[in-house]
Length: 186
Image 1 (tube, one colour):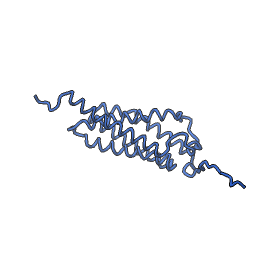
Image 2 (cartoon, rainbow, N blue to C red; image 1 turned 45 degrees about the vertical axis):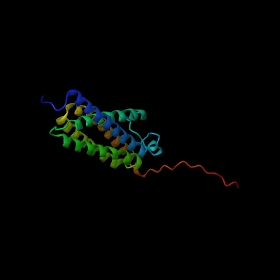
Image 3 (cartoon, helix red, strand yellow; image 1 turned 180 degrees about the vertical axis):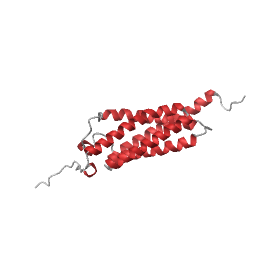
Image 4 (cartoon, rainbow, N blue to C red; image 1 turned 90 degrees about the vertical axis):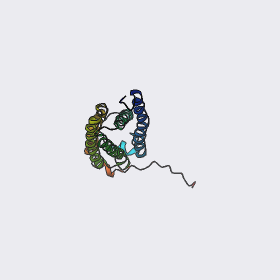
């Protein structure tokens, strides 16, 4: 017997990786978005002029969890590929692009730095492309799971660019907080 692990043991190992990695990726994505207030209801965001290609807000709430799930599964597949020749490079690229991904929402929504966010998303796209090619050298299925993410962040780059062009003063927009004034009784 030349095998160290049976096919069922290998499937269970992948399942364990997936059951750990997918929730972590999804939670971190959710946390970064929530922390920065990345919703269309945010007062600052509502004041921006949006491009015609802007999808309705609910689309983002469906797309991002789906993409994070697929990215997590792809990453789990690569992590599971112990002994694969290019695994370490693929893991390093994924972690790098994912950390860049987590910075975009706080910069765009939290700090209102639309131009800086555009440059971040371009770097994220380049790193995600590199990650996808590295994944292909380890597990082709993992690379294919990254393709929708590449398509979406390409589209998001265009949106970010157009918002930047339509709102050259986006960084300096001030939206006062809603306050209530209570009279002093006089």
